[in-house]
Image 1: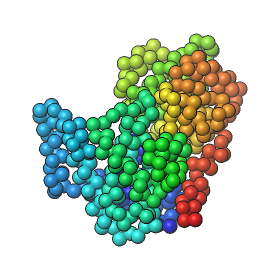
Image 2: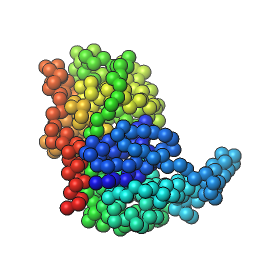
Image 3: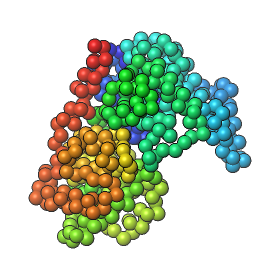
Image 4: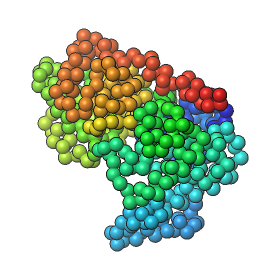
Length: 412
């Protein structure tokens, strides 16, 4: 099968979404599909074993000059026109110019795919908008939806209403109706989006974030990491809705109740956490057993640490439901270390780990967090291998073999 992938970015350092996209691309290649990647990273990037075409930005068009004028105007007069303009047009001038650039490049390709797979990241669905303007691709189109969209369809506490919500809702209605297939990283997200756009239930399949192999140089351990200790790692952005306060308080409570554990235990938080900077600075000052780095950490370092800590932490927001499959979930499964899941009762992470998984609790349950960490610590003291995840079912679910089966089943 020939697959044309249209994607915003293949730079694994720019977001967790791009890491997930690249992992999916790698596994489609490993599954021996004939893959061509058109990407809008706006710089030359190569991926092993696949032909990548960097889509050029259209720089001589009214939309391009309007987008630059808007930026200059906003910078000089300190007035943000984005909300006003998007309320009128639905999207920014930059968005329209970007999608025109993608559409123009796609119309020139001589590649004849059996499947056109559109991937995006964050709140951007540029590749989807571009393919909507090419009706001849509809019967081959699989629209991958990585997160709820538009933003007012996010579950609480994430939900908020954009000025352009009506146009964005119309945009996604068109995707649901025009794409031959839709794909989602989680079963709960498929059901969630299908409740707003019913056609997704008819066309949707679940393609989870992939457990891909990365050819990375073996990184040295950073100074703050001692592999002989009982290390708990949370790697990833701490958004406003994902406060680590209860996690830290639970870890401190565990240490207070297990004094001997203080010299053997460490909680490590890596990733951007600008909304929580003040709180994290206070915790870091008085707690030598806690290391916090508020900023980007290179992927190879994080990947290396995930494989060598005792426990990987997946922290989600306090909510009624979390339909997201965190992009780092496959990395944590591959690391084969116990996962401390701090998530709502109804969450994709908990669904996959299983309702009898022993290391799950709600994100704000301080006492329960402390209790779980203590159980893990006691098992680690006996033998660190007691904290191996050992989930072959999840390894298969995130694997090349399962992905190959999903794609081949489309033709049946």
